[in-house]
Length: 190
Image 1 (tube, rainbow, N blue to C red):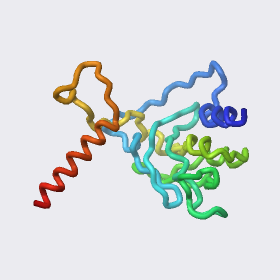
Image 2 (image 1 turned 45 degrees about the vertical axis):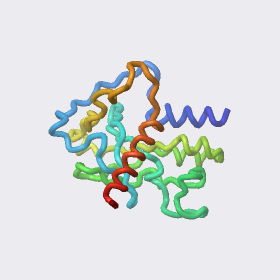
Image 3 (image 1 turned 180 degrees about the horizontal axis):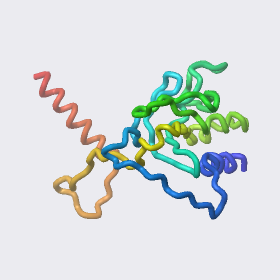
Image 4 (image 1 turned 30 degrees about the horizontal axis):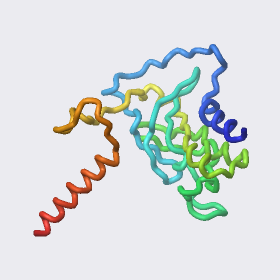
């Protein structure tokens, strides 16, 4: 039950909105003119991550990112431990967040690690599955944000010999890449 409550807090409690409440979408600048978008670098107390998505409510614009980027460098359990995140301590809410493309720092306003620590969560699977933080963009920079996710390309077709509907897995692709890499390494060594 406690795990469900934490998952609800992490999923739904970040920007709690009463049922039936709708907010007008902000006026976003064109993507080509926006200096803050998903993929922007966020630096919190020296740790850097990239923004994942843009969120908003009636008064603010937020950037989502990984909570492990907003943890104390060391606490009583030692350095940040990605294998056992329940021991990691979140930086205090209100900590400045430097946002690439912004003229003023944002502010850490939510951390799943902070919530789990406050609730005394100790299940490592629960902690490692909840790695989310929100940085509020300074109002002076809200007009620089566009929520469009950058496009970097991707698959453009099927590999020769693939049948339509055939199952593929990333492990197959990884093994193929490993074979290609090792054969090119052997070719260079010859």
